[in-house]
Length: 378
Image 1 (cartoon, one colour):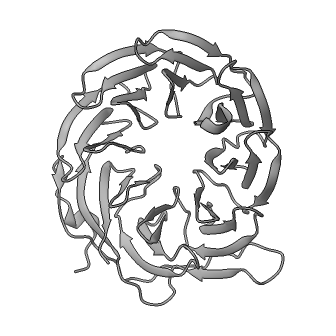
Image 2 (image 1 turned 90 degrees about the vertical axis):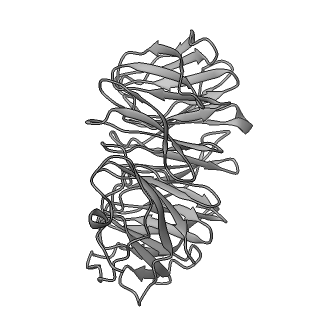
């Protein structure tokens, strides 16, 4: 049965377990084609052929505000919301039932981080919190100087957290006491993405003007790759290479040890979210509505998919399929090798937070205040 998601989901807060909704209507794919050297690139479109749904909604939980990227444990999934709700939630992975929650005055702009049964999250009123992941009991809070857009990183007993000026705080994971601080700068500005590279003992930040790597032992800067101002690159690492995509339209492949650029491509429009790397391909979607698949080693474009509208977040894998989220509320289900459209699902709202998948489920938060658990119905 075809149905709009808002017709399928009751308006009351909480969990609703219903069958997935499909939308058989064609999507306009009239956006101009990006100029590329050569004519061998395979391009597929959002309206190619008839397609099945391939996704089923297992449950949906109403968060009450724009929903951030989730952290997943063995029994609970954790998500947070921004304005209106301003709440951190712990939900049962099987049925979406709320196990515990914590409300703040100004909410959250970034999702939580789970490490060793402790959940860490930065709030908009300027605190980094540590919660017992099972009970929700607050273990400690640390005051920082402002809001944070990047989820914290927890590694070897230290939590790394950021705030608007670009400073990075090193906080003892057990006690919440500050150990050290990496000073920010006006030019570097706010940090959009933060991650660690275990093999190189690096902490890497995607900042206003580029990508900076810091030595975890000394906190000294190891290398810097500069981008245009206001690029705010998002980061993904695989096999010793960092893939950074940002508002300057470019995707960079950077050697994590030296900081040298292995390759870079211009996608033609801004990219807001983390690339996805799998089976030798790098996937990234831009504001013009194209999802690209690049060769991981060379940066050569293998194929592109025209979603017909702005691609609003990172793609994600669920079982054998690649899921792409467009600004028209549609989730397109693609063959990850060819980019061929295999199915679609009407989410009913735009998803701008990064989706997270496990072997069985795909979790995605929407701008109008829901966290969805989706499964493969094929």
